[in-house]
Image (cartoon, rainbow, N blue to C red; front, side):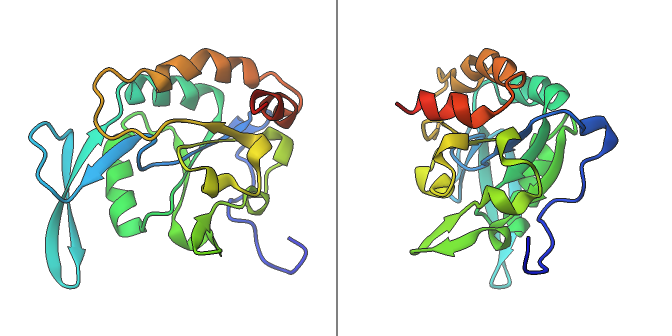
Length: 188
């Protein structure tokens, strides 16, 4: 990165050469988590905070399994979250049942910018024209709006179809030479 700092991701694996990098946010994009008991939680993760065990109740966004399975075959999948690894790692262990997430990046990989956690895609070590970020928080991709596909925040709507609706668009996007040319148009 010019200043001797290594990139956040290792070199591309041979099986991912030629694939776009799809960066997925975790909370309110793929799942919603709560410390309050949720009767229909998809899984419950025990997290230790200040030497006390707390249960985190996790709901999966509708279509997330199909989305992950299909996108995992076509993209290099990176989950980039502003959450702490002690929470996000066990959630991803449960969520990534098809083992498609190649890399996991947590809060310490974010930049602290004006009081917010920002995901700087330049630090990934991938060509910026090949990176797509799917995130419910526009501040997360404030440095790279033309790499972003905004998605609405999801909490518990069982009728939500946004992930499944995005599959055909992402499948088209994977063939584009420079994703920013398409995504900057989308924002207009």
